[in-house]
Amino acid sequence: MSAQPVQEDDDDVMGEEAALLEQSARGNGQSQSRLVAAKLGMVIRLAEARVEHGLSVPDLVQEGSLGLVEAIRSFAANGAGDFAAFAEKKVGEQMDAAIAAEAAAVRDAEQLVVAATDYERVEVVLHRSLGRAPNETEIAEKLEWSVERTRYVAQVVADARRRYDEELLAFVDPDAVDAEDIVDDE
Image 1 (cartoon, rainbow, N blue to C red):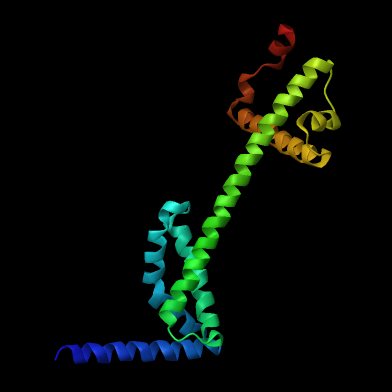
Image 2 (cartoon, rainbow, N blue to C red):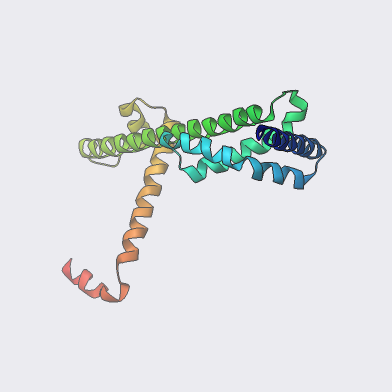
């Protein structure tokens, strides 16, 4: 007999959810906020299940929340019957897309590090063999890259060198360096 009150509670929750979805579809922000708050546990559960895939739980919850908002906004127009399943699918898709984007960004960064290392090595080798600084065309030919790619990687390397120099200078106390001592040593 205790199953009857639980059924009534479930019906009340489903009725409230349906009303909130309907109000949200009409642009009611409070209804959307209440739905997001009610489904946040599902977002957290899905985030925790994906934590080993490259993003932190807070990042996944943020992405999942975006998916949940999209689910709320598109549910009425979609014609799906079960909001919970629809929302779970949208949240999962949003999280999976964020994980894929993060993995692609990491791969791109790793490839850029390899390219920068290759660029620096070839630059040094050509400088030694030519007896002068090589131009970008010579470096591009040696690396079998386009001049545009070589120019881009050269800019990345120059920016990295500049940042390194700035960070190094931040540790040097300018009052401790005597310019006359440096000049006299030469």
